[in-house]
Length: 372
Image (cartoon, rainbow, N blue to C red; front, side, top):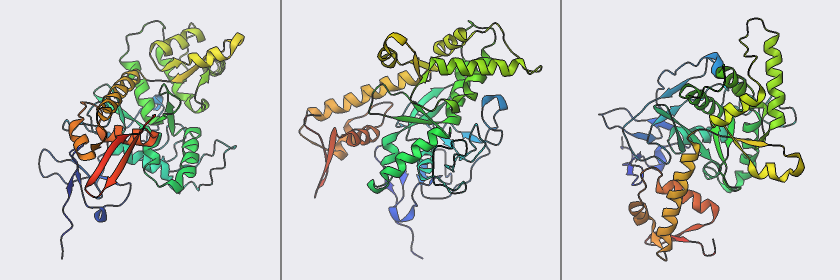
């Protein structure tokens, strides 16, 4: 019996990539360990390790499983160089499998999916996360990943663009993913809701803020209402309305721990100080005399990730600007950022139309698009 074609060496990530014929699409697996330095490969089935159960108050179903491994240090497309493995797990708020795009709680959206049929966009999302190709957001001794919209779109061909866009909206509306603010109108980043909730609780447990008596009550309220805030921003009036509903519900429950001294203003300030929300200055200004404040979802380390990402992108653009064009192979070797991979940046710039890749008989060449 003939043996499988030899594997190629990916020069950017140091990951063993088998030949195209031997690997199915969107399946990320782990190679059988032959030593201490075994790496991820794509294209074979693997056995999942048992997940870590979550507490009910974290906002994640007890049946949800998350397996996290800190592997050997290597360059990752995001921050920092941690290896994270995430399985398809139930939705934090509904208990439904994240492999389905059904949204029974959202009657105004006709998703057209049967609950048992996997959502291609969510499968692609999980594949990117499992392959460590997202932007890593550090939390205590670990990291969660944000996935860019262009990463998902580039997984499929152009004929699927409309369905991918529709599925992304459905994932947000069904509370399976959350959108993170990226400080520009073009770039969109998404994070699995279970990972966002994990990062929220991590921020609370590592915080030294003592401005309110019962901060855990505010965190419980915040994560339990994520499904209520489906727009790009959430208004102050929406937050206050949900806070009053939460407080009234707890007053009727004799067993509930309610901090009656915590006002809405204190709860909001706590979330801002904890960097779980950030003000939308532009939206608040546009409202004129009303001065209705709006907020984006945020995470404590997300600002650092965005800054590092912007610096790495500018470094690559400056390198390309000094030459008419550069061989893609040489570019991947020359441009070495300690945190963000060149391939990640290159894909983003190509998607935005700032860079083009020209195929020639003797290789691929990269050049900046004039006027961009």
